[in-house]
Length: 246
Image (cartoon, rainbow, N blue to C red; front, side):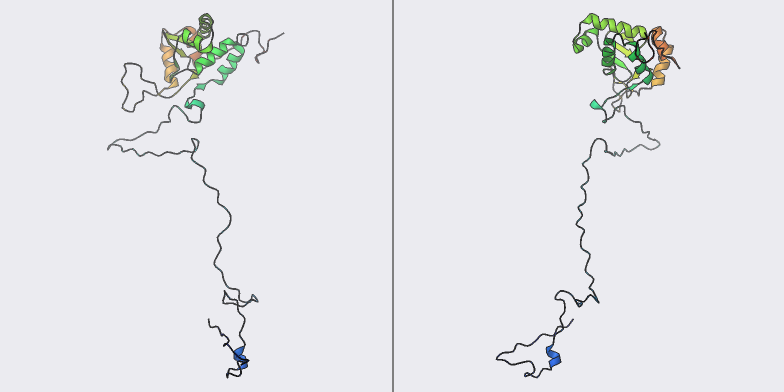
């Protein structure tokens, strides 16, 4: 692009006096920063300007959105199987149990007039290890809840009579896996060797129920609740919603 600039004139000398034509003294007005006229007939193409819209920053990683990846080298001739772990970071304390909805409704009605049984039952459900095992004593539960030992012993007897709990040995109890079960992997007991993966065998509910049905030493009430298709009857004197009949 060529610009025609006027020559400086001093002492009243004009461009004509210097021999330039009048047509040469007239300079077309052009946009100082563009190559096109200002009338818009040939508007210049300006480079695109960046958007002023702010991009939302990516949220920080949380326990609900983590997708960790791990590469495992397998020896030749082997395959791997993915098995979900028996815990979840979405639950308070990272541990949870699987509970029968029918059992919870039944227990609410069954122990409506003796609600301290529900207090102890919830404590036991929250204390179980994988497989439904609970390492505790009457004294431990009494101390944890702030009650005397006889109160706790009475409730244990009620739960055992109803088939919701059984005593495996001194200091070891088991909740009925048909009512409440904590899954995952069995924790190696004292004196047992840990597996190469650092975990025991996986808890299988159907295997547990089958073992109970085949165990001649299992209490009758415990086996009845663990039986396939077991039905929990609503106690007499209730309308099925926890309200006493008139």
